[in-house]
Image (cartoon, rainbow, N blue to C red; front, side, top):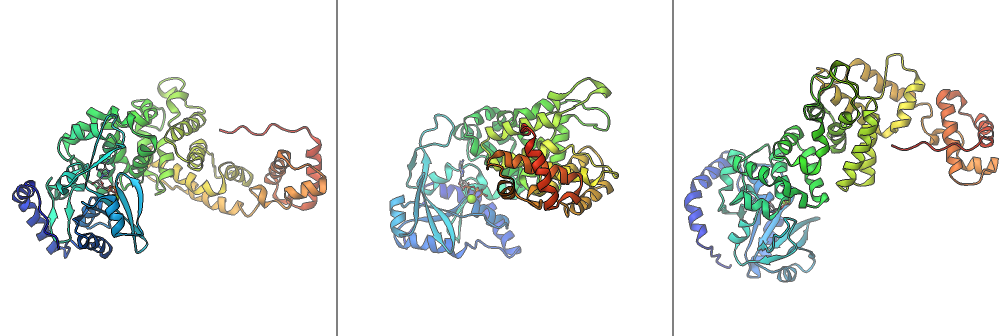
Length: 482
Ligand code: ATP
Ligand code: MG
């Protein structure tokens, strides 16, 4: 086996880290934990070692293992070049992502990355050039946070930046000079907030100051990368704290400035909080774990400042859900969400004001279901619960909402969409000679309206008769979308 030589820093780090290391090991012993790498990671290391290279587990996997959390993925750093890595693992894939080779083992892909530093940081985007380096210490130096810059061979920890100390103190701290690190890669600022809320850590004050100071540079990062970190913050155990961190550091200003219009924007009547605070509280209390439903909660009243009329107790926000839906669509497009995701969130924001009374008719309920879509009703109710709890109401599900949920199930025994009608588009084309095209859909929609009014009308005989009448009427304009 090759003897691994470390440069000077290692002795130094051994000196000032021994305290942490021994503390950590004591801890590990007490909790019955030790550095036990997964067998696949050890196997990958051993293959590389046998071929004469160095290899260490690094990054999030080591961090999570030391925290006693289930690692999401594993990264291995090595002094072998991508070509050499591929020779050691003939079935690997070189995705050409900055020297990272994907090695598959037991159904999982492990990222094996050549020791490297980023080469040019002209625009704070992810660098498109990397430079391979010889030493592990140089590779650890380019990593974002101290807790992500710990390497291990399964026996020892190599921890030049005292990541273990920060793990103990639950701190996200930049490696080296925070200011410079965020100037190199602005996405790291989002990663700091994301890691803080995922792990339940604080951000070290100096690191947080540096984020505030460099926040405008986030504009240089691609929308996809911002979106992915943002959605992980939303999906985390504490999205409310995440949003507050994004506000405190002014990162929100860079990618979601619409939220800020609600700052100190007073509401009337039962709403004691300004619009922004209320949106954040709805996110805090929405019971859903679905990140898109949580996003809808955060954005549900985003249209309020624009739709406000009047002041004081007489202030109204008529149509804020329509404006809000439009804004939601624009925001999500800008962040390159998929059309399906945009549709779902926009739809929830658009319909969050749905009315339900004890005396609501089946017909009224069927119309709500039809408008928002059967598959979205539970999410809509969750959004309403978050909205209520976020307005200071102590109980989310009141009797009324419970009853609404029951009635939703009840009324769906009757048709609520055209697929539940006793005839279909083909019947119209065959039996009534209506040419295929959009007109068929329009007639089916009109028939559904009729059946929503009275479910007894859902017979083939009635519907064909009615279709004939409707077909004779001039074509309607199709309903405008949001
Ligand atoms: P998770 O896997 O939970 O998302 P992670 O910390 O493992 O978190 P990855 O994106 O898997 O994050 O990255 C693996 C490692 O690569 C990190 O732990 C860190 O050492 C390094 N890293 C990732 N992104 C950056 C970055 N933008 N700047 C510097 N180092 C980074
Ligand atoms: Mg990872």
